[in-house]
Length: 317
Image 1 (cartoon, rainbow, N blue to C red):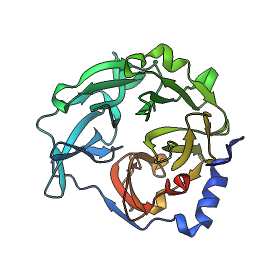
Image 2: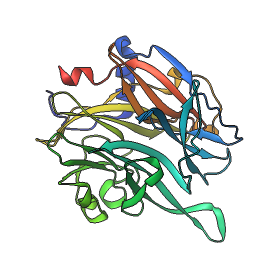
Image 3: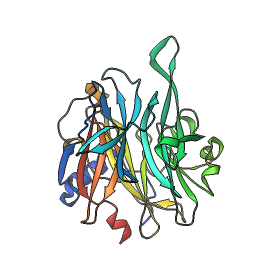
């Protein structure tokens, strides 16, 4: 169990705590290897996902100097990831995510709208959810509210659905985390997402973040992988992968802890100079040896992985 967090802590405090704790530092870093030839950048990937006899991974694909992205699903062949020939391409789509609920694949991402007079100007977005027994038969079944990213779901042990949201604006400022429990996937809709309880104990008002992936732990707690972000004095963005535990019964969460930073990953190009220190958590694979592999988009331009001590072990103790 844990002592519930009562107040948010600034990002730099969490980073300094991470930097001091050598036991939390990474073990190995590497690039995700793609076998599909493209001049576009591939980043903000999911963790690998096993379905049938294949291993899949989804990623955001776009030109270096715009955000008119699409999402491709890749399949692993001979140690590299190639574009899956059996999976549809998702146009005007960003930041994919994957999970499985009651035997169905739940796939989603952020659909963007552009200005009809200037296609490089993004004027709106929303999270879309697809479901199906296979990637070939994915069907849209739910939409999030306009302007909301980072909505993530997971099936609970009792059959209910845990939903994490990220409101902004009047309710959420630059971006808070919300939570609601639904009876089934059929209840996942804009109205219920907007009813989620909003927490002010994750991020201080000058900072923001969101949930990227949720794991159901052995004791029923939820291990949440997310990100926390801030601007520095020069206006550069800093995104850090972070985790916390969430108790779906008491609806309380543990204090946040940072699990990686940009310098832990390999040097690589950036979309823009102000985005070099962005690490966007995609997913995490827990391993039996007490480590985990974190998959992330780095500097809004590359896809990388990082072997780290399993950050959820302490929540299962």
